[in-house]
Image 1 (tube, rainbow, N blue to C red):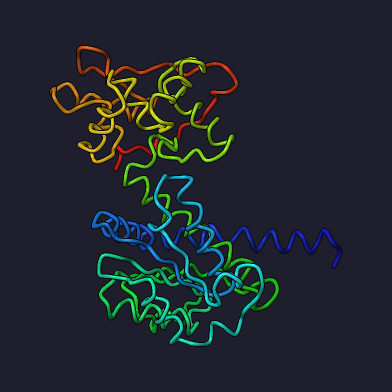
Image 2: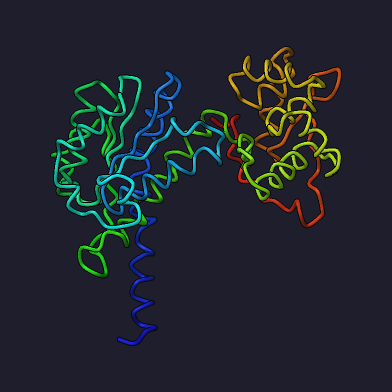
Length: 329
């Protein structure tokens, strides 16, 4: 085969993955609801995997704090072989089910937590051992595998099974199975965080600005939401301690930082509710606004009417909004 033929073959196989994941969307949605229910009880999410699956779990967990502003303890990744297995193969570590069970015990998993097993082949002893121990404790259990023949033997409440077919290189589950796993994990945590109010429209309003790039993103998000200039937005964020969601509430409700924090707490950290309080029958008009041409709304001073700000024309604010809002949930 020529180089181009090899690339085309791999690409054609990769194109099958999204459809395989889409067939599992009902189970994925059920898994999201189970995750959210545990989070609202104060629980944590643990991914457990080995090899590629384990690395993908650790990757997804590590990206939740900066993206959604959650503590690192809320979503954690457990990989067979520990930290060294992240950068160097430790394939033999997956063969011991008792090690998986021990990892669950070390994390002090409780009935409020949820454990998601990740195993492309569906039969990894380390992962199954962890899942069985989690189920015995009473934690929520979900399993993600690309092997249809393993589904009936998996001890989990929900089994997500995107069937991607044979790999281009037989047995190399870092390819299509790895891609399917990444797509599902992206959906699980992103959808759960949307349900928890960590996203407004398509904006990361709870991001943790830990570097210059994210600080600039914070500024652009507040500018997009409020229509303020960059200079005024920076001053607002300074008064809000760098917290995007707090700054937005301070602007629209005309309050200081402590009061904005109190409003957010009373609103269950849902920015939509914090911006437009439910104190007037006309507040229902917000729903139509959200379903219309914009996913941004704000409270005008002195009343409860919805205001729709026209989109900005400058290049920095040409943002496509997909309408994934708290209102639609």
